[in-house]
Image (tube, rainbow, N blue to C red; front, side):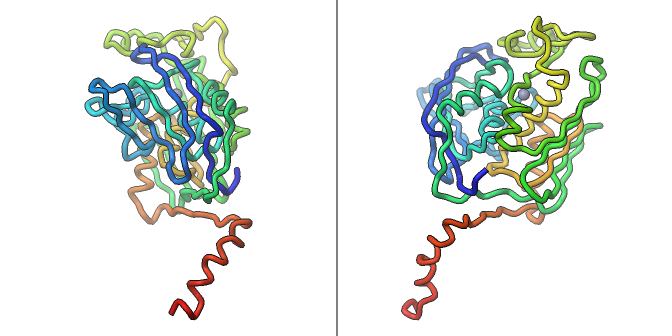
Length: 311
Ligand SMILES: [Zn+2]
């Protein structure tokens, strides 16, 4: 990854359905200037209005089944994590995503269709340095046996994710990965959402998972995967959890320099650990590297400040 911020090389539209609403939805990804970050623009609200939501933990509402930005009253966008993962995974710092419904398209349940869309337009560098959110002190959140931590790390962003399910198809799975566009594409992008038949029955009884199908979810009963095509690898489950974490942690608003560890985590833990980090001002700092090439460019601009004429 370079030292400059990036955005998309062009705009691209994607259509699909929401996994919970079952509603058709169209999103368009637009390039955005340096410093913009990732923003969702909810269009087509009932009163014809639109609402812009910054992809940031401060704007996260619900995290029960997926990660939701905003709220139902004023306009929300739910299930942002897979697109957020693709953007962060490929190192896209700035983009605006317009969406004409309240739930992101689930596609095939993985981040791969978003990766392909982003790669179709490519990314471009912007003439502004890329800041990182550097973890200075460990922070940890716990809930029951589940926990998540952010720890200082010498370089880049490392994930160390573990899950443990009673279901024998999943069992105990773990992955450790240094996040780069290459590792994201190769190791995490393809891993699909998974769910259990018994939960699916409960969710459909309360009007959720309406768009859920074997085309976008790995479905398990007590002893097997029900999808005719099987798994995209035995540890697809933990890879999906790691991909979710990349997307949820992207809601820090900046790339994190640190080590993320989690055990039996999920959206709630992921968002909580970022909030815990921000809650302790001594636990983090924002570092903006001065690119070597730009250093020379900055010098003439700085010189007048030191010249006698200025005093
Ligand atoms: Zn997910």
